[in-house]
Image 1: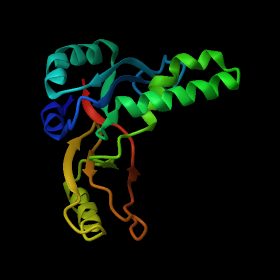
Image 2: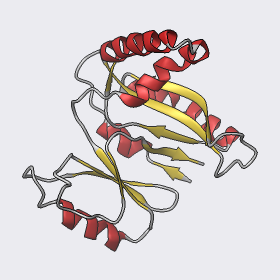
Image 3: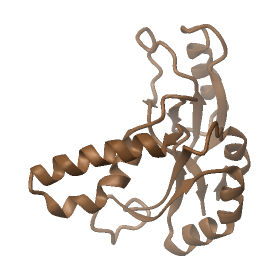
Length: 190
């Protein structure tokens, strides 16, 4: 089991009522070979406060356990206003292309694409439980521009860690691990 609720609650920042975090419970083919696609979204949450997340914690855990799924949250906040405008544009494009079946998926798709451009964080996916490797990667990114600490948090995953960091100049570094600029991280895995 991986439970990152407490760490993640401390990372959530809400500057206005327009801010939210996109959380999905995902059933993956990796753990569920009977799935027809690579993954299936069991349920989506739009986290508008730490209290909201706390109130739904038991529900999220139960859905993950029942569906053999994982809860993932993108630590880059979203804006309801920006998502609404991007959704309107996406729906218009979909309709103009006469792909009417895709209209219903537009909002979710946009939530996954567009962050709010504040409190940005990146995820470095380290697929080993070796903390020395986490230290090695940290030593590589810390001196990169801009100056200042890049470390935000270290979150456990099923097979390793997600190193959550502030954006940095990655042009001169080779990490040896996947770097994701707008991907979710693990909230809970049963």
